[in-house]
Image 1 (cartoon, rainbow, N blue to C red):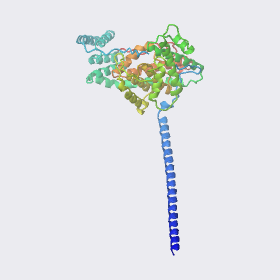
Image 2 (image 1 turned 120 degrees about the horizontal axis):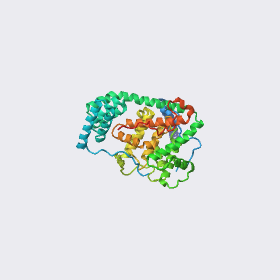
Image 3 (image 1 turned 135 degrees about the vertical axis):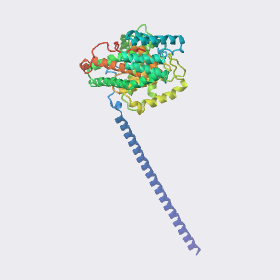
Image 4 (image 1 turned 45 degrees about the vertical axis):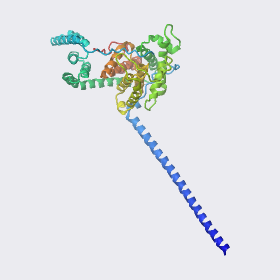
Length: 461
């Protein structure tokens, strides 16, 4: 009887174990199925996210013409070379001293005399008196306002007049006359600027219509490349001639009597241009902090390998402009890059966009040396991505370049943008003149001294 009872108990225990095993198998199966289902869900969500990212990227590409324009490669085939400064000498006038009562009194006397000459129709004498009054007291609101009205009435120079009205309001925001005059001329100035940019775009389109393998275009690119490097380092005080610059770039042979730093400035700019052409020019993604640091690293070359590609760690002084302290650079550069890659910035005309990028970067002055060259290279990268050739700012116009930078520091960046636009048009003229077969597309091209002619706007201020 006890044996039978034991067998029954064993059978019952075996069934219980079998039941538990079945439950365990069921749980394992359900758990495996749950894991597989979650993996499928993750894969599906990842696919959806990737698809959305592709759609957003395509939307951005289709939204901005500047990204779809054929980039302009500044380096012709066959021009190769190896990748190989004292603080920028910004010759910006120092900040004016506090108002001198005697000078202000003399300026007002000169202003009254100018208004009297203007009243009697003696424009030449009036102009000299206005210029004298402005030189004595360049921030006097009445002088700025009347001087602007004179230029507008007698010289028909609305751009300069509007600049003077803006300068008057910068110093005295409540000046009624200047405020009314600026509001009245604002739309006229904007239309003039748009017309100037439209003409530049026509010349760019004419240049882009020339086949890449056109022999005249290849020769023009090569010549413009030498000119660009020569004038860019010349603005900073490099004493190499154009012929010496060409020789260094073509032969890599040193020029007797010239310093090692002057050689390295040329080779550094050459390395930076070739880095931009081979790495950044055709890339569609945003410009990063690393890109700017890589450009600067090549600009400095062997002159200062320690500081190349590094933000400055000390305070610098640039003429009348005191750049932000070293502790502010990282934050300001992050803000600058946020603006540079923003939709608002990309919606600007390419020339305005590039000129503002140049000014904003050089105003921060993030490096101990090479700020001007790096800013001009960034400007030219943005222009080349939009189909323009790299702008040549000739060393003969160095004073205008720094003068417009100073005006921008005082609150009006438009003259600097116009100056860059004029330099862009002159560079386009150089290419179109060199490819004479296509020069008929743009009127008034054919003079050999295109870059350094006297028709560039001279600032009456």
